[in-house]
Image 1: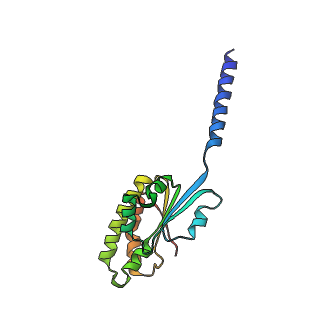
Image 2: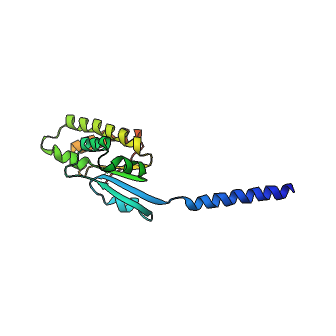
Image 3: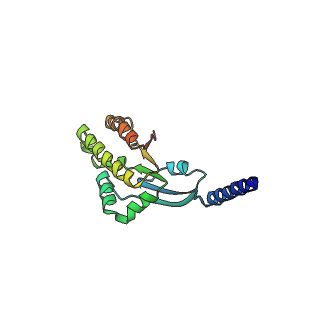
Length: 164
């Protein structure tokens, strides 16, 4: 009698696990902030896609993104919460804005702004985040930015993608 009860109990538990396993959603909700990237295909390779959202504006800067998140423009907070993969690629826009007057003080301020952006994003996104570096690594300012970003990216568990 006890063996039948134990067997019945095990079969019931196995049945419940199998039912719940089928209900697991394997679709990816992909969100990118900034310039669209070729890495979307790599990140989404062989995945079922639920939705792809690109959040970008002409000359979209770090402070603009921070303000959009805090003001919840275009329901960005909901997209960040739902995101299974988030790609941030805004540095080129930011650098283009100051290209003629680029200096170390500006890069230091940019790093402070990125730290603030990452901390805000981590409030909403608990999943995988990728940060794509600026295009031109030959530039001394870009190298300086990348060197300073490493610790910040580790702090927020953000994967650094070097496109060069």
